[in-house]
Image (cartoon, rainbow, N blue to C red; front, top):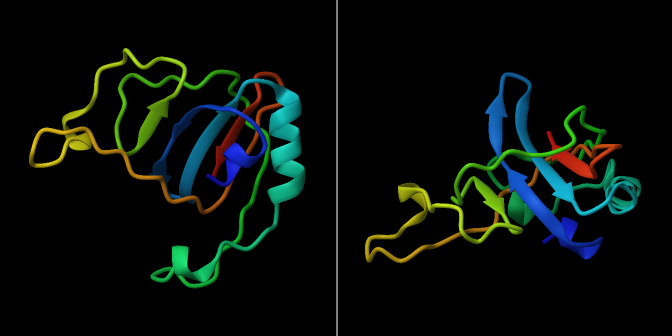
Length: 120
C-alpha cells in the first residue's frame, strides 16, 4: 500500500538476509520508482506496524536487478502482472481459499533501469 501510492506495483517479494529484512518492489517504469524513492527514503514506519521491532525507517536504494523473478504467488511474493502463476500452498488458509496479506515493509530500494524498488 505504501508504494502503490506512487504507481502500479508490478511485483514484490520479501525475504530475510543477514543484513535484515528486504522487499524488492518493481514498478512499471523507473520514473515511478524514483518518485517513490525520493518521497519515502528515510521516512519512519508507523509504530503500529513495527510494534515488535521498535522504531524503524525506510532505507531505499536502487537495485542492480532490472526484473524481479516471481515463480509463484504467496504471502511473501506477488506478481500483479501474471495472475496465472501458481499459488503456493503457504498462501492458502485452512478452507483451501487463497489469502494474501500485505507484506510488512521495513526498508526499500529502487532500480534505475527497470523501475525495481527493493525494500531492504
